[in-house]
Length: 81
Image (cartoon, rainbow, N blue to C red):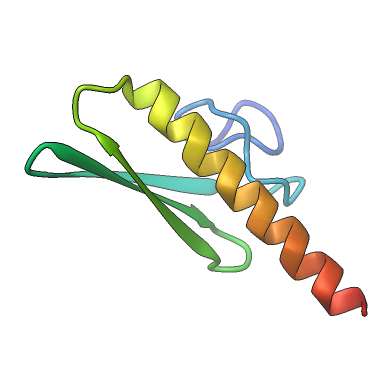
């Protein structure tokens, strides 16, 4: 299912800041910890966060997407220098 708006991933969360790109989110439980990966489809940039398995998936996703946005911004700024 395609995103409803540019800059949104397939689950409806805000995208990673690539404009019209998609963000892929992966959840994997490892014991008492949830490992969440956020991947920008356009660049292949991936970030990973870890949080308690009892945390809300939506909250973990927001943190992962925010980290991905920050990484993409840092990459963009370092590319301009």
